[in-house]
Length: 203
Image (cartoon, rainbow, N blue to C red; front, side, top):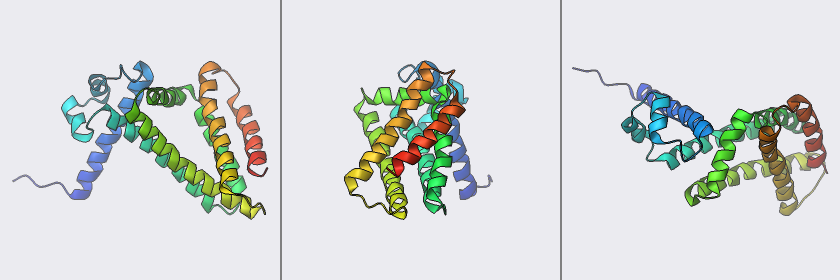
């Protein structure tokens, strides 16, 4: 009689398979673009059959949703680390450098820009992207409010929201620069970016 797999081991294996599919899908979207990154190509890249992929994801939109969710989880973790830090301003500055260097990586930027471009045409992807952005914005606004209050600044919701939106626009603009000018000095940009964010947060 075949021994049944322990639920924890089975869950771990399923998560590993999902990660395998998502990693392959990200590479395919970067290389071929959203529409040409077919399930067939993702199947080949992942080394898994198409039927196996459909066992974990209903369609390509579901795969994109999982990719977006994975990136959102990373950003929310960074936000939580800043909020838990003794010196939130220094923690924010440190993680700003990490974020700048990441967004200036053409490899990573290409994937994110492909998803945003598809969101401009596909209502399903647009909904996924906007929902994730709403959660990311809420976390950043909460951090900004706590940080500014700690420095004696009292704001209304509109001020906090505007600062968060400006920061988001700055970060997202880096992805376009990563494609247009990949030879830029990333470390120097990160240093200047930290200074700008510090000034903006406490302005």
